Image 1 (cartoon, rainbow, N blue to C red):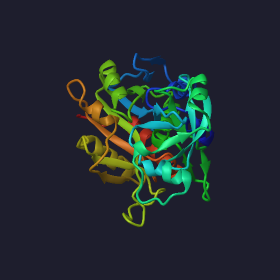
Image 2 (cartoon, rainbow, N blue to C red):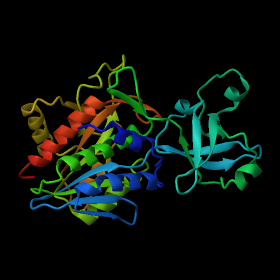
Image 3 (tube, rainbow, N blue to C red):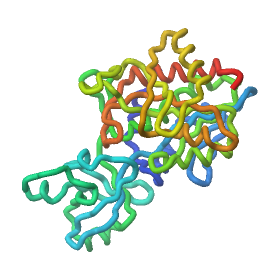
Image 4 (cartoon, one colour):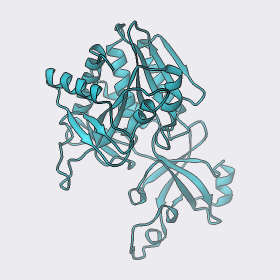
Length: 342
């Protein structure tokens, strides 16, 4: 059963790279009934272990989201920012943001702007990141008294909601709270399954360097692994690829790795046998936690199962719950029917 409220709570939680505590606490509570062990490692990854008798598999979804950080506070109180992860500056303009304490609670609100937009001058070119700033309406002294300083996190303030078609969802951090949601639901469906030794790993700092997956794989030493993530939807009038709602994506190659062909072929066969729509992708940019899973230790056969998201790597994406459901179904089938001879 799809629980959209769970996904809503995950998406709306604040969890930029390096400050994933609020998301981690939520996932800990939700996945606890379905696993045998839970621990948080030194870097902050949440590792949920479902004990079994077979080979060890690691499924990774990252908790962190893109965002901004205070880089400098001008004398007039305007806050200059540094990006956390890849963000196109143009997509930030005019957005309301929240400035966060170290524990993830909100200090105050602000609006993102830049000089020409601020005073109504002619805009001749899209601004660079170092041109934009956050206007809180406060002076530098007032900001300081509130505890806002260099290093304070800034997150765009968007709420999860459905669109005209109630199966179409939108919100911040769909990358990769969708993946976190999928792992929780897979764990729920496999709570009595013991034919594999399963680690559901919720990683930190994926957006800035895939760091969480790298540290976790050394602790787990999996026989094979899957990154459960999101990918760029290609259904614009430019690319004209499969529309969202046409099924999850399986990555053959991204900018860093070529996925394990045996796992990919096995997943393709499972999808075909069970009439689950599946799209294949080869991309020239971007990568996932699968890169550091695959390249850790002596090498771990890995691939990437993704849900397509429109406007990925902006602060508000669009996705289909149909794709999410199909990806969960395929993930469960894969664990119940794992590949052999890897």
